[in-house]
Length: 294
Length: 284
Image 1 (cartoon, rainbow over the protein chains, first blue to last red):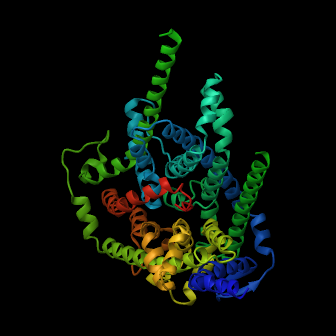
Image 2: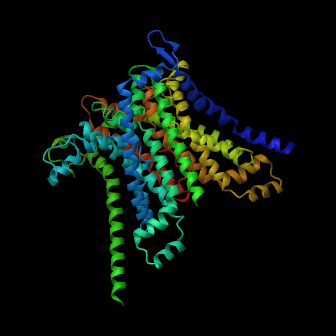
Image 3: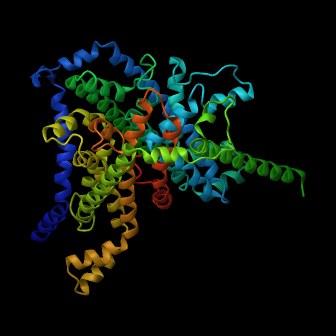
């Protein structure tokens, strides 16, 4: 009894410095943010006033809030779908080869380790209407007749950003699914093939059910990341043109540091946080159901 | 050989070929942006504006690099980046190693859920910290300082570092530790001679991860440094982009210089992710 107690104390004693710093650098700011959401900041005289839910109702009636709400939904859906398709295809491809697997996986992981700022610059430069290599290639091939303003036209900007972001993030999905594929039992695979199943049937009956947990995890991770995005859009479009790419991160940034409306920015960040929590709850539900089935 | 077997083999070979084609073309898409950046950075500025574009210049030049490296702002930013990343790495390891040890090796009740709770803060959107960090840093006059950045970065690196070190510690067989104790090693000696010694690769990986995260961090650096005193290299690149006449040559050269230091850690970390199932790979 006493021994267990000292063990308990000793373990946490080792962790105390870390926990203190985390309390100051993570927990306190997060709670502070929660409080700020119910206050109004007056930059003129540097004063705070309690306003209850007014910040939230202000957001609710703001067209810009709803604009970034839909832009974010499109952004998340586009990114998650595209990353899943690309990541799954490449994970399956890597899994079905042995020669050069190390080289290919090494190359395909490069975007993941790339810095956001560098990725943003790479793609600004590629998408550049006059000096960009993408238009250069398309013009040379005769696909288009005049240069396209990838990031400056409201219809294309979101798509161009999603493509760049997918380039950056597909490796994570790929590596998660690749890990899942290692759990596919070779015996089961062989038995199905002996039974005369073709590739598609094998995938549907054996591979897919096995990697379903990995797929859920990959979808969860890429969803959270898409919600938390900031750097690529702020550098590449700044939310424009006409707020067509103003996802939540940028909206909150502008509320806080352009309008100095700290209260509304904090409230909007809580709305973002809630959406992420919702996704996590959904994920846990799905995982539980999967466990129940098998 | 029955004909259907032959056709099946042929089809399989065709399938393999398609798979390699997919991997090759994907690799090309991954490499191309970097290749293009590198090709651009060696081009003389006049060739930027000729149309159609000059892909491979005949007049290789290092003038873009010279331009970046002669810019005192960029040099100061590089110095700040190195300083911040080094301090953040050191502090992250100093705090996370003992904590990971305490929570995994000492059979601490509740250690595992506690670690998961720490890791889960990785999922917090950075936006919930925008305003509170700003207020805290300005209260303590830490805006535009290296210490302020270190404070903000620790919120990102500490959870992931602790998780990675804890994962390494957990893989050390407990018998080894017990054997050392039987041999009369005290707590401290056991920690240093068994646990730490065996976890050096994992600890190095965690440290590199923290360094790369800090090296590439951009959001907090943008929000909390507005003067050159503490601006890091990523922020300077953004500043280059904001100028009226964007100097793309210098920008590309600076981006190349910023990417180079990541190559070495990448080679090491890649090994970790392939064997470690990417368990700790929560944050990019």
